[in-house]
Image (cartoon, rainbow, N blue to C red; front, side):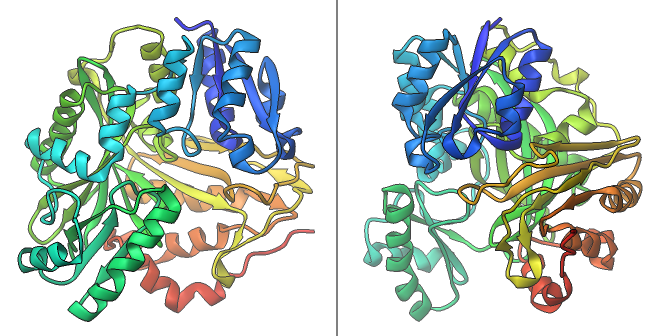
Length: 458
């Protein structure tokens, strides 16, 4: 077992990791930027180290400062959380070189699955279906035109080193394609330092379904699937488990394919294999693997009763995978919504500020993951996520009713939040019927966004 873990992150995920570590008897170290000196994760950790100014590149992305903090405090492990350095193979290698355990997969697995083209190749080799498109990076626009013969339109141009919805363009004609190709390359280069692109056929009205996996480098298991089809600009806003779109056979095939891929790449720790699912054909296609804990992991924890963060810490400490597939059961239905400091009626404009008062929802089947407290000032330098509200019910209908109840109890005074969005979605007949796809929400927002005006509590 690990003795002391440094959490190289901030916000709600840092709080989540610190709590899991303490439950296992592992000492904790928080690092923080100047903007986060009064953050909750700093207050909860056993030791704290300041690592730099507010700008992420000078603090939470500063590998040298983080490694020095680990050395100064005697931490034997570093947990990267999600975002920042979580999927940085160079950081994983630097930890190993310093004799510090990186809580996550090997640098080789991060590098393979982080490059979307290499990941497609690995999935194909493991017998996992991939979206029709280029099997490697597209050398230039001439090669891209040739690939269009097979993919047809609409086609998606994607950054090979991408993530978070950046470096992506959709073209529905040759003229759009020739304009979008250089734009995607430029955006990919600016965002990731790598302008490489690949291409995929657009799967019309696809669902986004992902499988949670745990591995120890040798073996792997799945913890069933989540559906994340409600997205805005390819960013998830509402996640749930299980997916009611799948038949039992499709679910089994999907989950087993994720396990095959995790085993094929020698995956260690918690990871997520993501797919597009075509309702019309019942076919699923691999799109990418996230080699880290995900924002929506509590959804899976609610239906399985498994602490995914704790299992990742155990595996990083050298313990073999202790879960057997036959013992991992899913019970009921869970939904997570992301409460952000944003105004959905004004194109989700950020709304940082001070929390003048806070009322957290409770009761059966309700979980509130956050770093908030009354008097806390949300800094403007980072992601706008304030809290994750997660609910569990015996059925999907019961979970939606519980979500509405819990949202009604939630008060984050002094800020505007995305709470009105989720109240409106929970009442929408299409959402209630689960008749959605990955592009549904954007069309819905075109019609309804203007009336999603948050209350600014005094």
